[in-house]
Structures are given as structure tokens and as C-alpha cells.
Length: 110
Image 1 (cartoon, rainbow, N blue to C red):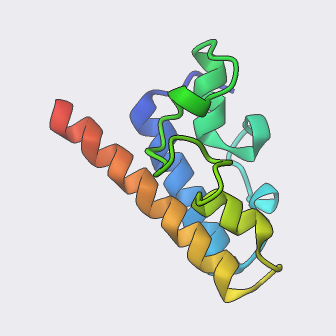
Image 2 (image 1 turned 180 degrees about the horizontal axis):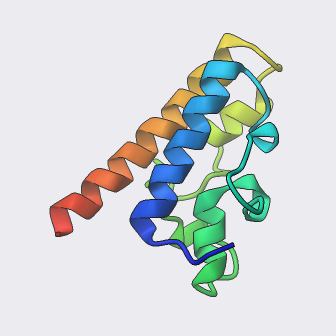
């Protein structure tokens, strides 16, 4: 996979999670444009491309508790929800909104 900029990774991540919310399909079923990113996640791919072991503290998505697998994380809610449920779709939309928040932070810095 080509190297991603922070902004590009967040844009692709947002698009990915909006697709998950719209279709109700699993995040790993997304029709990736090129090679599937690490963990089927563009934010994880960005972290790995920058030689960060695991993204936890370095994730480009501004998770409320600092990590996607934290107890109150929308990603954990997504993983815990039943397939095709409203809870799963709502969690996917919450992740897309966090990608928007990360993109807004980039624009502020420019």
C-alpha cells in the first residue's frame, strides 16, 4: 500500500466507516481500493507506516479514552454489537464522526 498522509488516512477511514454504517456489513468486507490495510483500518495502517508499534497512544483518531479498544470506545461498541443492529450502525457513525474531528484538528493546525 502506498504511504498515506495523516489527512488521507482519516478521509479513507471516515469513508470506510460510513460505508459500514450504510450497508450494515462487517468492516473487513469493505471494498478496499487497493491492498487491505493493517487490521482493515486506515488509521492502523498509518500508524504502522510510521513505525509505531501499536497505535494506542499514537492513533490519529481522537478516541474519547485514547484508544479504540477502551471500554467506552465506539469501536468496542461496534465489536460488541450484534450484526446488522442499530447499535452497530450507530457505533460506525460515531467512529466516522471521530474521523471528522481528527480532520478538523488537521485544518486548525494548517
